[in-house]
Image (cartoon, rainbow, N blue to C red; front, side, top):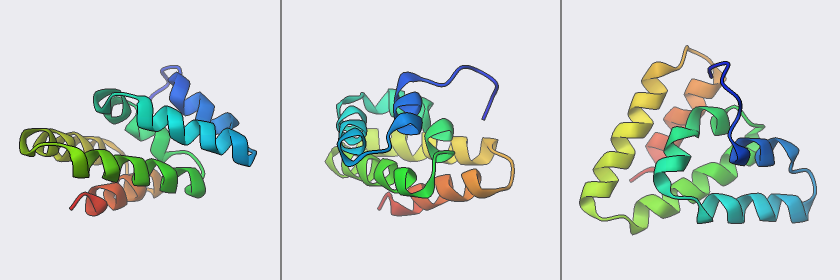
Length: 102
């Protein structure tokens, strides 16, 4: 991840601790345009594992409902994000999200 300020959805994910806050985080993820989630993916993948699971779930849902062109755009963006990350846990998590996009 870069030194750029975290997006509001990443900050919401960092701050979410209670069930209600986690539920609000998921609703925020679901409401965001796919392009914005893709742009924030590296930051989202750096969150704790439970929150990354929620991100993965939402991304997979958006992928399933996308048309063929949008699916290709999503897969390419996730691939590009993964390839741009150094080896490590965040890169592995993005790879796992990519694997889930079937």
